[in-house]
Length: 113
Length: 112
Image (cartoon, rainbow over all chains, first blue to last red; front, side, top):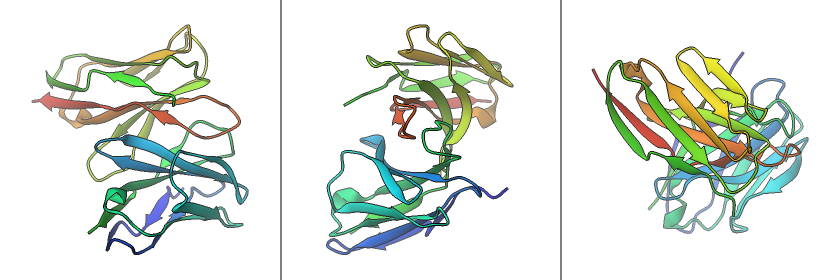
């Protein structure tokens, strides 16, 4: 069974630009969550999607948004990038909403210059 | 917001030694999880704990869910060089959401 796949693995963007990251969950998993990982703040929850609906949202500005498609694949978008958005963005999938056992992808390393 | 206090922050041990790390919180968690992360990779799930007082093993790893549901520990016995990495505890507050709260991590280094 394939794991969680995130694309791209690495991105370099300029301040003010926008970026879209993609996540394909484990086959059959319906819930996708996104996390931001930085050395200073650690792993911080961004949002969770289940059945194409956002179920929960972390404490991030509105520049961070996401969506989920009918095949459970998810995208997250960051608009008007700031230097502080440089981080590892991780996607995790669970079999259904509310299940704790989350399986993570390798992440997308975003660098904003 | 909710926080998990994980300790120690880092450990440097000799191969063959046992390791213990723990997480505490002022909040009651529904589920506790332990993850390991290696450089350039996402966290990998090691152990999941669902019941207060539950003790679960996975090979050389043993984890326990505290009776009060506010703490958990992870033990690694007879450490080996491939145990190197960052270990995270994570808690689920609400069973209706997949949202996890993570500790700050324990960096483990093992000297052969």
